[in-house]
Image (tube, rainbow, N blue to C red; front, side):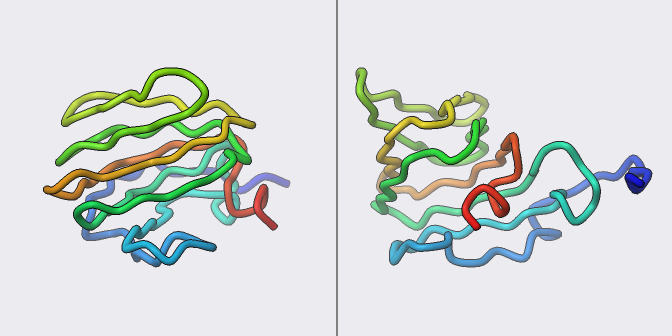
Length: 120
């Protein structure tokens, strides 16, 4: 039986940010809603220290909304750079390098399916 979800509001203060799994960079993620809540998607925040880089093959579809700073994402096409209010979609299976710039970055993300279970 699926647990009924309540309407909720979140801020960055609600996120328990932890180092991004499998990475040494100063990149942190904090889920706010995920499979433990019975949700269909994972929603959270990410914080990137200045000049950090993360290489990953996407195990899920990932939508990243840049809230502060800038993020560049390189894949098999041209590099995409996004700033506040812009959205980057990284499809499942994409090999990406995500890089923050000199000011670092704060992002919000939505993944489908859940990235924690996809990486397990």
